Image (cartoon, rainbow, N blue to C red; front, side, top):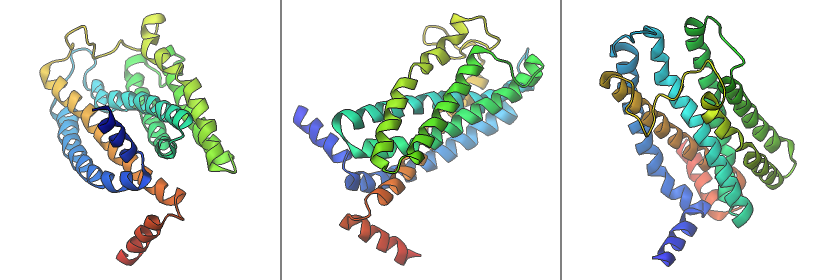
Length: 253
C-alpha cells in the first residue's frame, strides 16, 4: 500500500506525466464548471427569491462568497506547494504554486470588488476599514508580493524559494480572515455556512449557492492545470518530450 502510494506520488510529480495526465482533467473540469456555473448563477441571480432584509442586493453572494473562499484556499495551496518544494525539492510544486498566484489574486480582487458592491446599499459606503475587509486586502497584497518576487529574481529557482518562504509567512493572515468577525466587532456579517449549525438560507437560495461554490472551484482547477502545463513547457525547454510537444503544437497551427 505504502509503496503504491509512493509510486503514485512520484508519478504525479513528474512534469512529463503531470502534463499528460492533466489534459483530460482540464477538459472535464472545464465542462463541469461551465455547466454548473450557468445553472447556479442563472438560478441565484435571476430566479432565487428576494431576501427579506437585504432585498436583491444579497444576490452578490453567489459570486462574492465563492471567490472569497477560493482566494483563501488557493493561498493555502500555494503555501503547501511551496513547503513541498522547499523540503522535497519537487520542482513541479514550484511550477504549480507560481501559476496559482494570478488565479488567487483574481479571486481576492473579485471578492473585494463584489464585497464593495454589496456594502454600498448595505452599509451606505463602498469601503470601511473593517477587520475582515482589511485582512482580505492584505491577502491581495500578499499575492501581488509573491508575483513580484518571482519576477524580481534573475534565476527562477531563487524566485521559487523566496516566494515559498513569503507564502508560508503569510499563512498567518488566513485565520485572521476567517475569525475576524468573531475576534473583533466588525460590520461584516458572520459566516453563512457553519458545520455546527443549519444554513440560515432557504433551500431555493442554498442550492444555487452551493452549486456556485463547486463551479468556482472546478473553474479554478481547470485554470490552474492549464497554467501549470504552460509553465512546464517554459521551464523544461531542453527536455526531448517538450520539444516534441512544441513541434506538434506548432504543426497543429
